Amino acid sequence: MIRNEIIGAIRKVVRRDIHLEFPENFQHGDYSTNAAMQFGLDAKKIVLKLSKDKKLSKIVSKIEIAGPGFINFFLSKKTLYDNLNMINLEKLKYGKSGIGKDKTVVVEYSSPNIAKRFSIGHLRSTIVGQALYNFYKVIGYKVIGDNHLGDWGTQFGVLLRQFTIYNLQFTDLTIDKLEDLYVRFNKSAKENPKLWEEARAWFAKLEKGDPEARKIWTEIRKLSLEEFDEIYSKLGVKIDHEHGESFYEDKIDSIVKELRNKGISIKSQGAEIIEFSDHPPAMIIKSDGTSTYFTRDLAQVKFRLDEYRPSKIIYEVGADQTLHFRQLFSAVGKLGWGKDVEFVHIPHGLIQLESGKMSTRAGKTIKLSEVLDKAIKKASELGAKTGPLAEKVGIGAIKWNDLKREPKTGFTFNWDEILNMQGNSGPYMQYTYARAKSVLRKTKIALKTVPYSISLTTEEEVILRYLSRFPEILVNAADNYSPNLLCEYLFALAGAYNAFYNKHKIIGDPNEAGRIALTKATVQVIKNGLLILGINVPERM
Picture 1 (cartoon, helix red, strand yellow):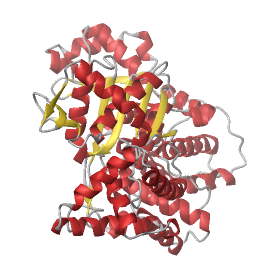
Picture 2 (cartoon, rainbow, N blue to C red; picture 1 turned 180 degrees about the vertical axis):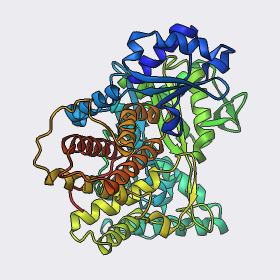
Picture 3 (cartoon, rainbow, N blue to C red; picture 1 turned 30 degrees about the vertical axis):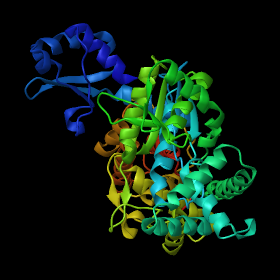
């Protein structure tokens, strides 16, 4: 990357690791470093030595000192045009790199609970996780996506109890019905807490292989997976593996045995726990002998380490699970597993209702299918008349409105905001792409390599400078687990192109060839970026 060349040149001079950043304004260059100020060095001497670097002089046209020890670097016109030509040559490959070569990363995302509606609360994990999966794939990692389904635990004891108490038949099963059974149980259990004993007894039956319990559970799971598949199809999300908690059922005993043999677990009030110096204890076996979510997560870690040999495991799970993952990673450390593996929890902020936190138990959720349907309808009303186009635009709006936020930031659900299709929105990005594509359909000029001797307007130069940043933006977004960084970049690029389009003639201009090349490269980068974010790019709007 261009960045690496500049960093290498500076390190030769200062002989220290340095940081290079993007200035907020191109008037301050394409790259900037505060190395002189940071290390108490003479900025003038650094610039003098850098100006004599022949390799660097081919990349940058100007190096200047700004402020108290900042050094700014301006890319040369040749570098910018070489990059432009490379985009149009590499097309969908532009932005890809081999940074993750020979490394494997596992990304856990989505992870909805069986027997519950896929709510708006699951949207963030699903689309942020898919974007992270795509980022790591583009920068060269072998990526494995895992949908850790919540298909085991006491909540199924609740449903088994309700199913048998109300003498229901399999033909009665719908997701809405199951969710209603769960809500009704929790209301009753508030007045009669002993009902939880019945639920736990049913889960114990399920875990011990009771035929009736297993049959009901199998049907409930099947019904849920059918709905999930429908949602994933609409969202354009594909996850490599669906390993529910039940998948680890036969792996629990060996995990518990290892914890005992290594003296990590202890008995406590009839249950079995792991104690931590800096966290509350975690329960691994309940007093009734059944396993816990924590134990199944340990089994899941062991399976992933043995099966995939990853260098990193990323959990894209809500911020409300932060303590759980601190306990989990600490337990993994106590067990001595994956010493060379990086474990990362991406704690996305929660989507709340104006009345507070969403809760299936209290019947306070918003169905994701309802949100998607409303978005598609709104897109249709705004002019995306055809079914497929309305779906691309509507769902693109929903995705962008979430992905443009920093994942850690939570927000209160608002219909107008979630369905926004103006300004910094998915439809704006799609429209910019389609608008630029229409220009390419009108030209009769065959695209060729653009010589860097062509003069540039201010607007064209800004676009070229933005285009050169794309590969680095992908790496930054992956390193920081932040798809919003790519959204910010694409929105800025689209704004720069629209400013150019509104001010300058393209078709019929003496420099039509150069402007077509610029338009084509912009189209390509917007397309590459939106596809990484999981957003469709309609050719016409």
